[in-house]
Image (tube, rainbow, N blue to C red; front, side):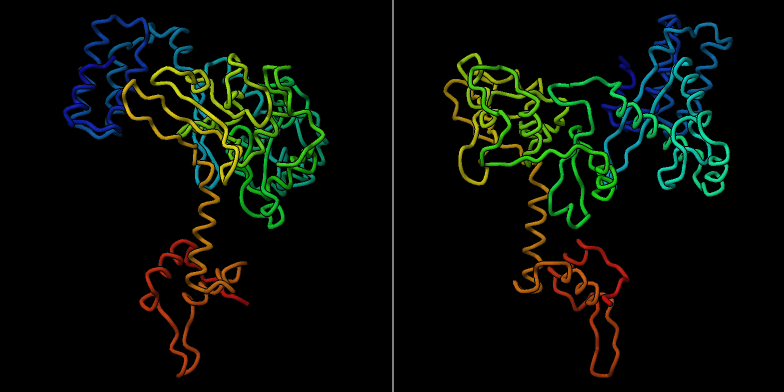
Length: 421
């Protein structure tokens, strides 16, 4: 689409940040601009990118756009519709995520009116139990005024909490429908019992979002719990044989509750459970496969349709025994005469468990098997790092006194000034 810019990038004269900055400028060229002017603009912006920083590209690009359409007569509704977008970016390490959008005038007008009545000081404050919820027009003025006195949120935080309150009301009213890919249209979350007891760690939603356990406990006050029992029989109908082709809601929930059920089972794929299908992994339905929970595995639409006996497609099966029992293996079919490819399992869901195992081994190496469990090894490391001499016979320890494995553990758990009581 932008050959001059592409050549400059291939030659190493511009970087990826320059490319993104130029494309943002070119995307703002009105659709009605003559083709020759668009080609000239692309070449001009490529020249600018070679000699300037990404920040300069944005400023210089604005001047070029003004030259292309000085009277603003070329821009029409088709340009606004073409540029409309809303992105929910990937979740960051702290659990938060950024939302970026380019709004049409119509949506901007609706959002502005919504924020005017929901994002007011004192309204929809999640940290204030006495804060009114919903629209300020329906709230008690005295209650709003009292809550506003206690409200120290910024305007951006007011907007955030208003959106959260609106979506909460939408979920509670059932406006999103009753079912999506066999799952109920609700907040579906799975958590480890150990984390719930400790009130620490993260739970996972069907869309792949991580929620801190303390937040989950607050949300669970109005939740419908669903107990999943593995290995033993349950009262839930999970075995249909040839009676049904599509998995039931109960089967979808049980599949999601598996340790690896929150993503597609294909190695390297991280599409979350809300977007996957239930794949007849042991034997395809068309070949006589059964719609039984022990034969089903989550698979995204793309990989589900890549299962066949053709070279380049996949052969799948369910593991029946061992530590991977109940998981689906994927084997890429080799070309005729070529050696077979190995079976693979999506190991991404194993990362938290494997990290816990490594941490336990590290603690055992440092403190011994008797003190490796519980929270006290972490406190002991804090004492080692923070220790100061208290007597002539107590020389203390410094980072230089620690072994390499102790230094690794110290870096892993973080250095802190907290002292054990």
